[in-house]
Amino acid sequence: MTPIRVRYDADADAAYFCFADVIHPGEAVLTVPVGGVSIDGIVNLDVDAQGRLLGLEVLNARRLLRPEILPSE
Image (cartoon, rainbow, N blue to C red; front, side, top):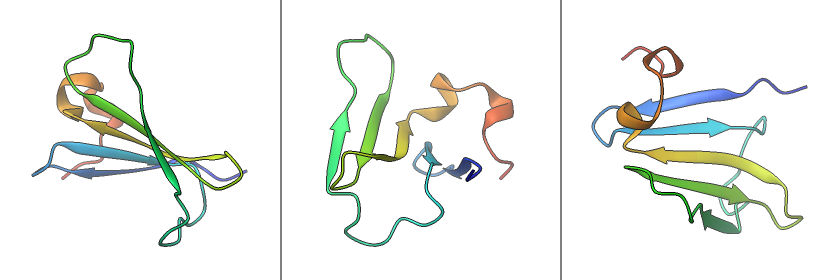
């Protein structure tokens, strides 16, 4: 089982949860915005050609995520 890795870019206030060991360039063939929910930020899902979830991006991460989830800067 691959552990979920979290990367955080403080300048962009963006967190990325990676569900794959490695995501190669071009492997994420589709980025699906999560809609229908009123939140103060953006959540996108990265999906591969087989429809498997590779990662999840959270923009405005400091507002949407608990502080203990974000890696230390």
